Image (cartoon, rainbow, N blue to C red; front, side, top):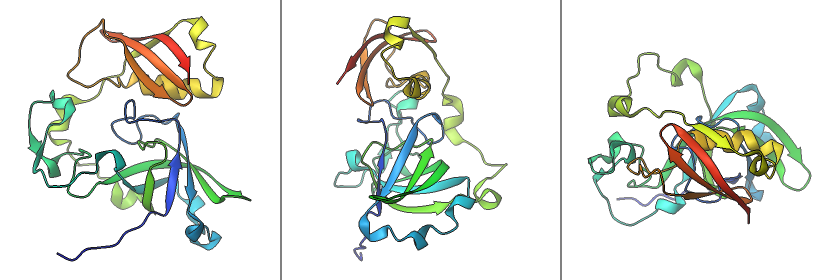
Length: 228
């Protein structure tokens, strides 16, 4: 097979410092803002002419934490309990023949920075901080949105929201501008789908914090917050 060359055009910067806690799909946590900074080669302002006219963008990006050799035809989606195997092309698993991700994000603003060139601010990204982006394309509602589309087996495993509980003494440690994003992420239940131990304490990095939490029923409680 012919070997194709592809290179990164930009990096994304946000509060997701590790894989744990990243939303399972784009658009689920719209209160988390990400910044896209382009590599010098792609900072020509002409390349962005007209982009502000779109409300949403498609990002094609590199699954850096899931890049591995070899092809596995089936994967085990966590939302199916981690034991049921499905075809890789019937899932959005990061373990793919080519580690390429596709995400739809909301474009918040386009800013011209003296040092970094044109910078895009977006919300709803499900990319880890520092992820390389291969390409950006506008989202077109007239052809990208399908009213009669079906969810396949994902329909039976729709994600429910948790109520997030946090004592005032811990809440005060979180900057005001970070609270809504953090709570939105936690409400998605970052735990692996097959773990239901109500006594287990999980630790999720977010921005400059390590957030320790427990889940009982439909309530997630923040039990400790450390600055890192």
